[in-house]
Length: 599
Image (tube, rainbow, N blue to C red; front, side):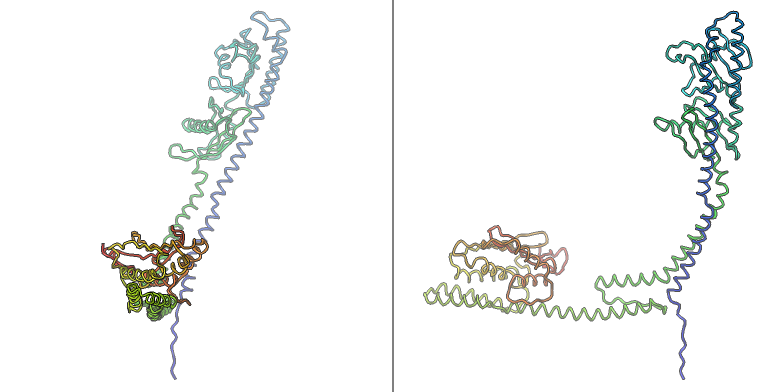
């Protein structure tokens, strides 16, 4: 008993599954690691928390200072202050002393209304005195008073001698009249208290906050690093002045300082004209995330290596045999039917190669059979067309000879019989192709025969054939059938004035034979229909007979391919025009199915 041993054949499919899993699983872990890292999420949360903190502290500061400014504004209309501003240097009355005492109590009230006030002062320029919350009277520092006049901003926050003040004048006309006001109220803001508030933002090393004027006239920083503070102030000023018109409400950006990147967040108070800025070293924020980035690059490199190995393996098991198959198909495209493939592995490609080889072998046999059948069909059609004799034309020709003999016109009988003999000799000649010169002589013989019948009714003009194209090989019977079509359908019913022309036009790669008559005007629909029929004509024989235009067109296509054939157009003489196109190639350019001529 015979036994057959089965060899296990691992197909391409499980190989692909294994390789795809090898690629997908690492990619899955990369995606999982990236999702867990949440770098963008962390950045967004840090940015949102920082902006929220900045906004809250700025709102609190804004509320505190606005309350202070409102108290100053209300105090401008104080009666005691107004009365004292009218006094000049000299002894004070008891009522004036009492007014000063009440004024100091009001100044103390302003001082205790905010955590940021360090001193309150009322300037009385007429007396050249100032009243503070601590001192009864003191001499006015004229430079200090003038400085507050010159540096005043629309927000009433000014900086003088590196100190920050809130100032109100009455009346506030110095910028226009250059005259000192009747009195001025200023509140000295404590830089230490403001810095203490700003130090709440020092959550990381080298992080800090800066409070600055929108016009960059002053700034207060939480940190002691003057270089970093100046760089941050300049950066914030650039961000604020970059926007045309009103400064932006807030924003975030990244700034580099001494090879270190800082995340900068800022928000603007439009009411006070100040900006609160918070900066954090980027490394301290995203430093823990760098581990995930290192993992990412490590896995990326590993994935690249895997992809390279995967691509090489795919090339080995799939791409290489496919390339061989593609090369074999390209050989088939060039007409090489001897292309065969060989594959040693017993897998799907082995079966595919075997099927390809069998298909090519069968295709080679079929092409040979089709070619032989096509060749025989061409020969049969050509011989069929050559053997056809129009019985109507034959009857008319013999009838014309009978009439001429009856009239004893011997010269015309001889002339007609000569050309009729040439006609029958030509169409029965056993030749598939003739020279264009010979084809034209046959057409002229046909015209001479027809001239006996249509004497003095039809004038024929044939241009001289260029010697360059005299020996051009063309299928037999391509000009005479077109001329016969003109006689039969265009000129036969004309009693007089009939015209028929045959012209030759030289083009770069073709010679055109233009045959026109002045028969009935060609209908555009008919011309369109005929041209469409010519385009649809192929190499397969249709049920047709006679030497009509369609047969001539098919024979030209059989001989020359798509470059040869017929087309029709409205004749300049008024009837129908037929264009015969014969492609040519000069011998120096090579040799194809087209006819070749010497230059």
